Length: 147
Image 1 (cartoon, rainbow, N blue to C red):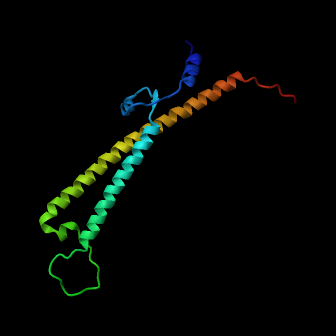
Image 2: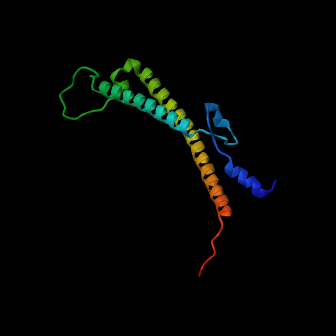
Image 3: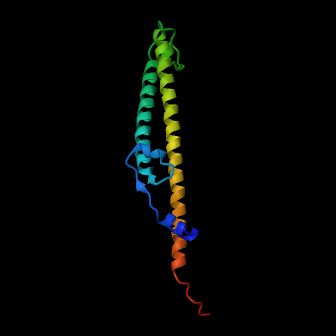
């Protein structure tokens, strides 16, 4: 098999759509995962956004609750975290925010890995387009210049 015929077979090779998330470990890039990654990313972003918005809402509502007996009235707004509002449960709030923070970091690490895969699939597609265009150029006769 010559280099030229190998290049043509590579140019004609097409991706197959992925059936399983385990195709992420397809080292030959024979299956493309981009549609699956886009759907997964959307679901993960929706879940993380709703989780963080819920925590922000709870924290905001808790910050308006009185900490102790009312002091003299003040016009200054003072933001208080849930740990300040409910001192007996400070460890619980701290644990919740840490768990959510670590979970978010893990989720973004996985999403980063998946989007690297999308970029690599895109690069392969671009190279396949270039090979296909080159093979078309080889097959199309060059017209004589009438000049």
